[in-house]
Length: 132
Image (cartoon, rainbow, N blue to C red; front, side):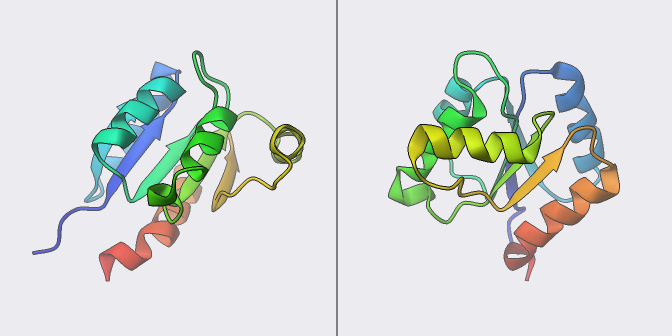
């Protein structure tokens, strides 16, 4: 039997986390959550998820810092990252490029508020390889 795809959801807003969990708990996923970038990195050190859903604006370490740190580690180079944030995509990408000198290596960018169908479609798209 194939194991459930794992998703790590990182957002400091408990209402957003609850909303995402309500949408995803009806699916066959193993879900974990973190409230900030530091906690995200701690959980990543324990277990590499099949997908990382990441907010950009968080305390202690923001999403840009998480992406920089994660993409600098070879074991996470193939881990899909889906950004789910209130930050406009163009501004977010420009900031990352100015800070790092490279383009932001992510697989999807969704601006909040996201429709549940949009969220599920993107998740399924990036987990499709795991479910076959």
